[in-house]
Length: 50
Image (cartoon, rainbow, N blue to C red):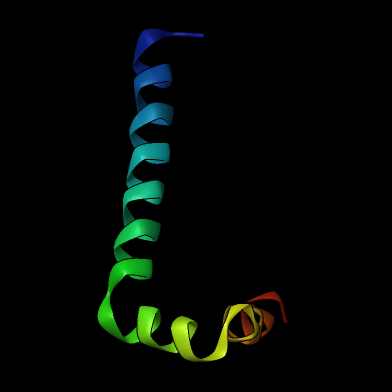
């Protein structure tokens, strides 16, 4: 595997992780999770699968 491709994959993973963490820590999502628990996250992922 070339170095450029490896760096691209690493940057992509870091970007996705960073975005996920930012999304989780944003006040609206965190507030909903604190109130409803994991059920909110399950409800949010169902439309994406369909």
